[in-house]
Image 1 (tube, one colour):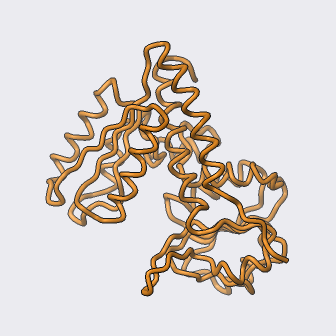
Image 2 (image 1 turned 30 degrees about the vertical axis):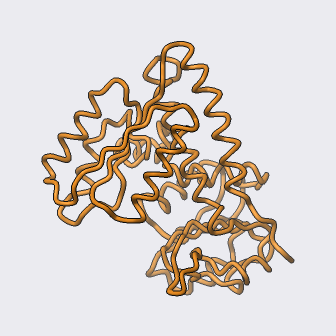
Image 3 (image 1 turned 120 degrees about the horizontal axis):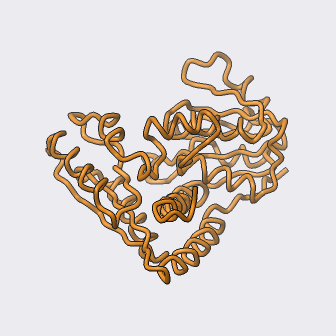
Length: 286
């Protein structure tokens, strides 16, 4: 068996085109959705992500602002920047690029973002709404994965889903969305005993650990759908995911590549969340 490739770039382009059409309609009514991205320091990977987000906003017709701050900024000064964006009527979505320098409390910064502008979906209010099945914003990466599964026609009701990785950014919200879709969900972490026994049960396997190629083909159930969230650079310069693509693709029925899989979907869903925030601010969405 050779797995079907789930093309995140192709799907994300279709979503971005739909966003652009909706933005154009809003603009005729005098409303331009706006996203502010706060970048602290000069982390190379973060700089690339921020540049890609800004470019995607511009192409879709959104207003975009990138606020670049020195790595040694005080927490008080950073929180003042966030509060200023909360009060800015041109800004409907606020994203503080993670990770932050060690002297800054990321949780405190996220909680300072107005919940109705928290397009990352990380604010405790939005996490609670997701937990109770009433999400205001779905975190972008899990939201994008759900769109990929939907586009592939994956039947989630009654399916066995295993999520490897229990972060607040991907693992936990991913599990909540899969539960809401009717799947039976197992969350694995670094302390899970006999991880292969868990992953081999999965009809849908989502891997988000940050450990290169930790999931091999012999850990995948034949015919499973495999979603690889990781992106890692190896010593030889190659990019790879958390799944060993060569072996897993011979067992799975469908699999996301790295790059070109989940990554493009994350940015696409950020645009969707920002658009919906703008619509909500104008009373066009509950």
